[in-house]
Image (cartoon, rainbow, N blue to C red):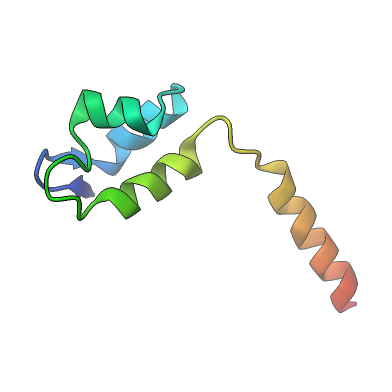
Length: 72
């Protein structure tokens, strides 16, 4: 899916850059994402944060277990 229409950057490209360790500022400089009209910035930042290697995924499964234990 195209995220940045102005520079024709898709979600796979942003995800790949994020997984390789690029910061959002680096992606903006390299690809031009969110540097022209700015309409894609929210979506691009969200995608970047979801794919960034700095994001811890372990806490997500722990929260599910805690919520399930409380509900039981």
